[in-house]
Image 1: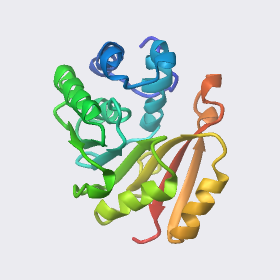
Image 2: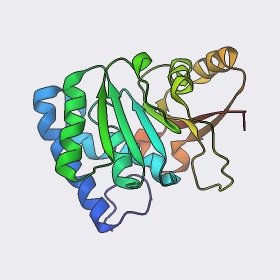
Image 3: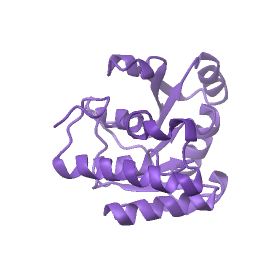
Length: 217
C-alpha cells in the first residue's frame, strides 16, 4: 500500500479507497459548510484524516457502540466507521450542517454503521462503550459527557485493543487539563500516548492520544 498516511496501520484496498474518497468529499463540502479550517483544507488527508488514523493503532472490538463528541465533518466518526465497520458510530454535534454532512459522507462512502445526532452533548441519551473526540472540549467536560451515557465497562485484557472509556486526540500542554480532570473525577485512569512515538511526521510532535477510563470493573 502506498505510504499516503502518517501512521502505519493495516488497511485493505477498500479502506484505502474509502479514506481517499472521504478526503475528496470533505474538501468539496468544506467549500459550503466550513467543516475544517480553510488554511488546512489542502492538508485534509494528512492533518485531519491522517490524525484520526492514530486511533487505528489499536483495535476497537466488534459491536462496540462509539460516540464522537463534536464530530464536525466526521472526524473521527467517519474514519472509525471505515477502519472498524463492525462497530456502531454516532457523530454528535450542535451544528446541523455538520451532522447532515456526516450523514451525507456515510451514505456516499457506503458506511451504514455511521450516523449522526444533532443537539447539545448534554442532551444526548444514546448509550456507548467508547467515546471519542478530537479537540472538542476539556477532558473533564468530555468525561462528564461520556459518564452520562456509558454502558458498564467490559473486561478487556488484550493490549492491542482500546478499553472502554474516552479516547481523545489532543495537542499542546495537557498537564493542567489532566489535573482538572482527576481532581473532579478521582476514580479515573489516564493513559497518554505521544504521537511522536508512532510517526516521524513533525506535525504530530506535540500531539497525543489521551485514554481515560474508569477504575470500576
